[in-house]
Length: 357
Image (cartoon, rainbow, N blue to C red):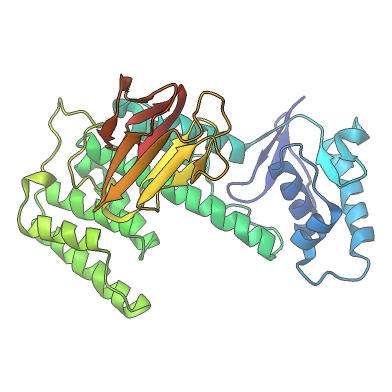
């Protein structure tokens, strides 16, 4: 019998359709930390810090034992060892499903989805969110960090969903959502640049320019800085009515986006790896290989010690094979050099990743 827990909103648990009484904020915090470690041991000190912060109350260890005991009766009533103390800390040993893990897996699937179904896949992943993640827990620094991580993962997924919709020429359909997202994210350039592109492609050049000015004024007023060079370039392209901003034709592949694809406008490019990691390409030269000293280290025998390099210049990214043993491929083709575009699937000796911009 598997219990399902939900944390992408208020923390809840359900077994056989019946909600579980998970207790108060402290007890839910202990449970959340244990579940997020997916069976790995969590030290008592770490649990105490997550519940009480850096200055725990006297008797916190004793109180933690009580919370664990209460949780055992709720989440694993038939097997007390379902919440096990193994001499080093506590870990979950009972079967459970967790929406956080489901979201992460669905995001990996969406990142590698065909162009025509990518946006739908991102929407399915985003539908798991019911509000602010990990709501109702203790307000400690470890919990805050996890809340920030999950909120950023949602924002990245939302950026990718909008970009996928624009790449499939669904700019008019997503305009209402983009306006709402811009209101919710007043300083997130990716959302505002997506809105500019959608407005321009809908025949609303003046509104696209007003959107830029509105965003610029907010950046200056609240942060004291100008928008990024990429965002300013996008404004110039709108002013020039550049062909680079044209609506993708029906036959145009989303794997060959225009040079001003909104994905490239405001955020660093990143690699979505087959092992579940997402790595931001923040350096001018990124070395990928099996060596621990590589910028992106991959523990896979198919990957050479120094397998490939990604060079960035003015928003463009070039993949270069670095004399690898098993070769480098882009979209199934063996390459020595290849200029990357959003959606390109890279294979380093068989280890796959997707380039996202």
